[in-house]
Image 1 (tube, rainbow, N blue to C red):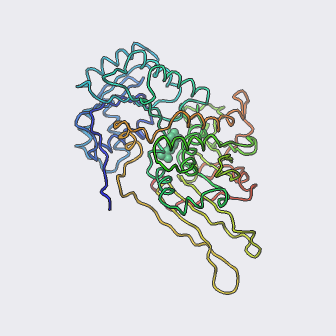
Image 2: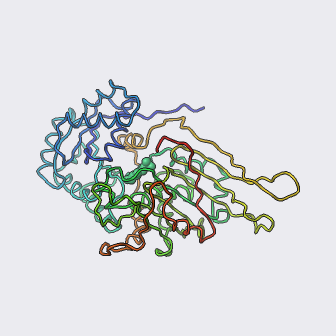
Image 3: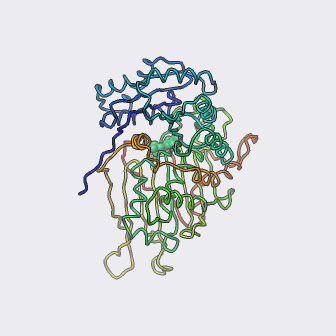
Length: 489
Ligand code: BG6
């Protein structure tokens, strides 16, 4: 057995959180920081400084932080938490006011004991706010030779290809590409990295995973929760920008890219971008289903005439040499029956099966959430002379037994260490926008009600049209929702 290496932050750092009063910080970032502290992965000297428009004192910020940890964690180590709180600070300011950044820089100097440290600016704000912050950080010179700034930018990067390119231009004016960490938290999930590792470690998968054997691939990103109070962000982006353009397409790249001989970051990014470049939606009208859950318009902060989709089912095609002709189906949505993130690979039958009608296909299910599981479905003959088969499913849950951290914790350690391997590059992001941009043109904002936007019940599996999308091709969605799993319900 190899010795497990536990990553730890070794250099002093300052983590500036833009949008520190918002839900992303509360739901994902604060618990990750606490996790690192609890697991003793923090260096002796660090500071966490929140910045947002909401006026707040340091004490109020600390109290909010504490509340969010106590809400999420069953057993809180108060000693660890208290130590953490002492290192927390807050500065209020506007995102577009240069003077506020000048003041912020002064405050930061007072908070940081030493200059020689890693300084990280974490963008926990909706994409609309990126531009002003990039500019002001550049103008006000937050980025110095002695304390270069690392920028961590959560997806979605931009709103479409055009805006993403504009943002990149502004960034390039003030920062070097090595300073930029484009974050999709799915890449920090052990289960997602495992998709690639599984393919490297198991030649059986490498042999079977191509157009010769695979009939279709299905990727699910289903969620039980609604928009969790994030109306401002979500109504602006919708599920396609929120989940498909980033998380689900990233899962697809790990699953389908050529495996480069040399597992370098460059080679992997290159192959991922090749996959993304090869994906298209052939017919926007027939290959996309958009839905909105019934009570979406009643959510606080959502305009009564909102046309934003909270559900999407899509059929994609790949021109990639390994996958030409294999349909890829994706489904993502809010307020559905269960939280379920999974990949299903269905295999072609050996030859037209005369006596063996209606047999289910061989299938590999890789479940990523609520827990990791891999299952292989085979067919075995029932006893006797008849050609009757039944499905034999073999597989089991996988429990992390190495260096197991939640995604934001793991990615934070990489950022502090200056490791950009699990972050996106601009090429990948642009290619992903090229895939999803045409969908956004389906229904113009001027239309009173988008005809294509189908209303679905909460706790369902989305609109019926999603079933038709895949059934018209002779396949069906393979749901294998975990039973009685309360972890995320
Ligand atoms: C985020 C989206 O990126 O991912 C959220 O903005 C979504 O809307 C979340 O709920 C899902 O992440 P996870 O890790 O819970 O599957």
